[in-house]
Length: 425
Ligand SMILES: [Zn+2]
Ligand SMILES: [Zn+2]
Image 1: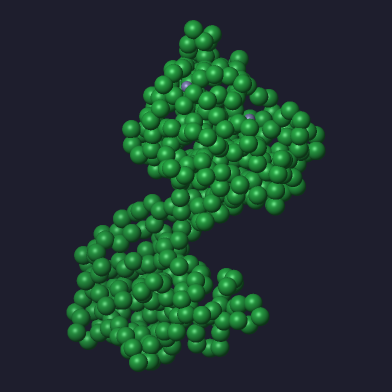
Image 2: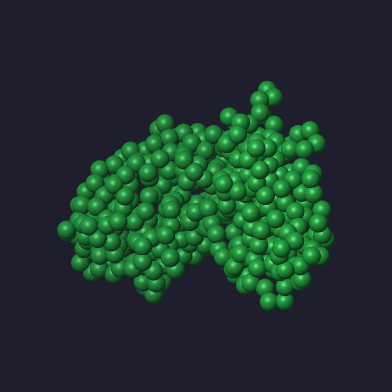
């Protein structure tokens, strides 16, 4: 059944409008409760709170530790909330979190046949798995409710227990829907970089190979041990060898296009609650592929387990053609730690993203949207997490370039939406 906007139904229950008047059945997912940076207090004791459709909500069962009786009646499928006459103070539930990460889902809201009562009157409430969420402002039936936008604070004052002068701690916690590394392809031309910049950007000087570059693989079964030309999967299809010279990545025009697309993808991903790490933020940088992978790890610590969910390279194509495609992974990838379905996951991500670009922008699909002839890209061979690689339009085709120069916001939004589909499917 399709999710639709929530609406008020009759005077009592909150329900959700479904196509052709069909109603949600018990257990259907009808919305979501998200984390909030608003902290709610009852008589100065903090209580865990979330947000559903703009309401600050608390879990009904928690109210038992804040001066209320919460009584479940199985016969009538009802929950009744009333002042507890046997509580002399609000003990609270312990540490309460103020969340940094707006819009990130805490739980699905599901359709329920349970009715919640305050002072004998049914109220709008929301069911999540195993609990009922009550809008804080419904508690005005029993006391005073106030909100401070400035303090990001909601207060309920009730009369039958005292104000708590030694409240439980409130701590800030970062939450995200997922961690995405966004990689705008290319960067500063190598001829404009000093040796210091090349070294700082992760390039290696190798006189036997004729200068600056990087190794294509890790030693088989490892990460962060460059192959050095042997002991690796060894397949090379990119017109080269285990060694990739820095100049092979020099592009004009493409660096600006890919950075602009990624900046908009970042904006939309962050709005959806993702943590986004960019491999470069300006066109003055040109990190090696190897260096771009450090953002897969917490605090760039490559000795830790990677904590990012997906690495997304955004490029633009050249050399005769039109439209957008993802580059397909196939064959052997033998870096340590990757899942056995690394190539499948990566190709799924590439397809989700490219399909969104083709559906939501004027760019067409190049080669049906999937380019199968470059499975040995350095990033494919070295990434510790699934990776999508998009060649978004042809910057050397004037029609595609006109689209790239006018629809970059839609392209960024489509990239974000494709990533979100991959993460949630
Ligand atoms: Zn190699
Ligand atoms: Zn490129």
